[in-house]
Image (tube, rainbow, N blue to C red; front, side):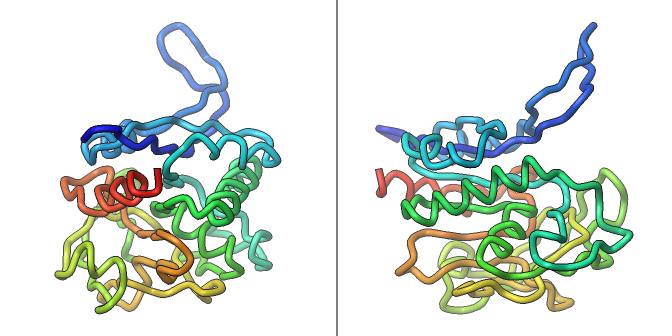
Length: 231
């Protein structure tokens, strides 16, 4: 692809990470994310957590944005008491990624939320989350899989029109949909597996699964195409 679009991907901020002889705080991202961007025809740029006030400036040179998976969203962000099964908070990452999402929506930059990224997109638009669901992360640290069914007429259905088996690892899910949010795929148990905004609001899609661990490039290719067009 000539003029490959530049896609920013949000990252983890972890303390006391060991590698080699070092034990240091580190910015991390599973390699599957940048590799998926690259395989889909884009250039990947990793975005470490920063001051939320700088989100628009960080986003300005980018053609598209991916909010990566990761820890549970702090329930206070959507006005809910903490369920004891909800994981430890990541307040710096919540604040930074919410600012990135807001900046991307305001600038109409193509945006893809993956797992936590989809949940945070829904929260950013005033929605809520179910803090625990069974059956979508059965073995700790091991990705599972299950089929998802697209909703006809949605952007996601235009990308993946058939029922598809996807790699999954999550124990939370979308509950009340945010402003303007459209569900665009479901699991067999009714869990919302993809969300999007109307085309009039730009290219915005969230998927509950982890395309970076699988071989299907279509969702990321669609983001890259949208980013190339926007650029």
